[in-house]
Image (cartoon, rainbow, N blue to C red; front, side, top):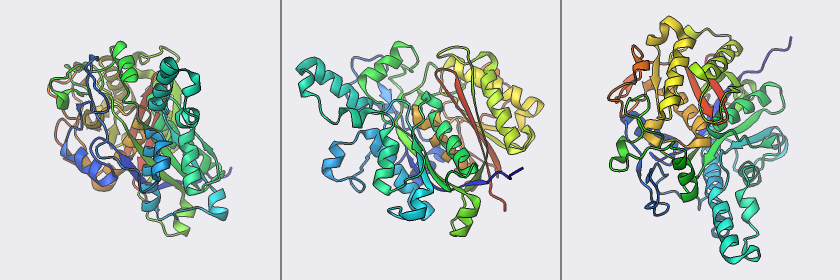
Length: 418
């Protein structure tokens, strides 16, 4: 049997409501700072949920000139900036050439694509007619163009596509990128998720589902995963991108290895379009398969970075899943819910939380679950890291992501040991 190639992470790029790079976002997470504010992208007065976690002071002018900025949707700009950050940390070139370009691919996922562009185009069509629609409506709006633009900008000519699986998107992107490397179709993959869905119609759509928090008078306390008072998620935006490499390739070029991706699995609930399967059984199957592929047992996991969106049924099912996965040792596992601080970034969430997971391994700090005042009864006996970060040396992290449609991913990251 051919031995599976080991896959490591050598670069990371991050944009969240807490900061515009890995370091600033990480510092905000460890400090337990909320990035939720009244919405700024538009006047939210007509909405029942008027809060969100928007990326502050975002600027892509170092990547795109003025003309291209106008022709590039915000989600694509997020993906380009986060990709450049990750490539720079990995010590990879400004522009890929030759064999390196051919052996490097991109999977930039997004749950929604260029919804701001599409919303503007549809509005123009309704008010002024189809002859006034921008010729850039389609290339700015379709979800696969973010991955294409990363390759166009930086020169990668290997496998290139987009994952679209709602809130599991980022997990799928990173996991599938690792499988491309393992089967030797690439040596390097740029992978993650980008989302810029803070648009009135989109926020209104989630509000119509009663999926969003309406705690408008106290934005910083609105996202409260696992708390009995939770009333829905807070919409966020941002991007997370990692550079994955075959271990031998990274070592050959002397790259600094940040962590190893040792396990990945994906499952479907086949149950309900928005609600998780009873008991979170789809999440359980994903985690168990990821552990099997990693050659690990549940007691070898130190920490769970939970999907935990702050919805009543979703959080409950994930807590049930954690108990099923870890059994009697469930109380020994540190659990954290990052969305309490930077909201739910939809298609970017799995990638952003993967980066937080890697930082937890590197730095030893378990980020807090903020706004956790009255834990859900399902959480009895579990360590949810309430409100304050805890220093605990961590070797392994299970990062969960679940999407509407019943799509689940599990990523397992580990401290790199040769």
